[in-house]
Length: 80
Image (cartoon, rainbow, N blue to C red; front, top):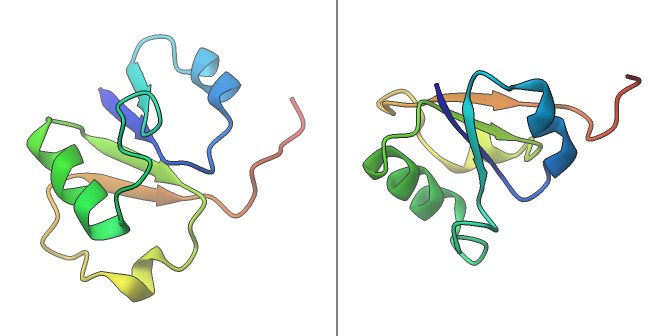
């Protein structure tokens, strides 16, 4: 699975997803994109999943027609 971490996601969490390709919006040079642009480019680049901490995303964009799955996490820190 090809996964994209949005700005709020802690990069070290990618090590728990070893069997997947995990990139960050920052690494891809997409930090300045707004949510709609980020979703568009992620789909165009073949990402299967966007993981974000932006809880307002669902209110800002119509997500029903999107081709990638979106997970919105409530926190950026978890006990390991």
